[in-house]
Image 1 (spheres, rainbow, N blue to C red):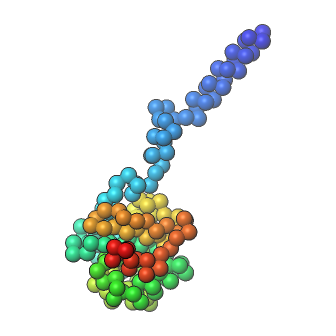
Image 2 (image 1 turned 90 degrees about the horizontal axis):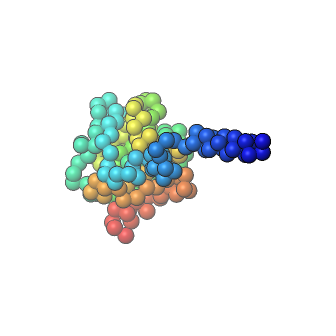
Image 3 (image 1 turned 60 degrees about the vertical axis):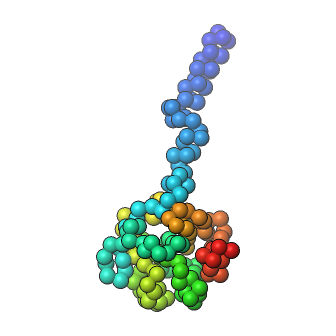
Length: 181
């Protein structure tokens, strides 16, 4: 009787263990599947945003090739840290003119347009600001907090500034990055 109970308990534990694991997947494989796509491929993703200026589409292929450094900034117009970052970038734009900025939000286009106008982002040739109606950018980078800033150099990922890790860069840090320091 004891052997039967022991065997039944063992079989029950085995089935419980198998039920919790995905068949054919190791823990490492399951973790890799949950990893943000940008961590798997260092190339700048193919994105499409609806521009605040004229409601036209702007895509990855339209980023001017003359810029070695591209910053994708996922923001929210009502986010205090995002507002501070926009002020910083605008006030240091003379030192950042050799970089290209893509500001992206999911909020209504009117709010994004107001943000662009208020902070003067719409006055720079090296800035595009718009809406991501497909929610591609936050899903691709697994954004949890804003401003989430990704830096690319010659189309390849160089650095991620993630507020979740407690780091939102000042414009001087972006300038150092662009200047290679």
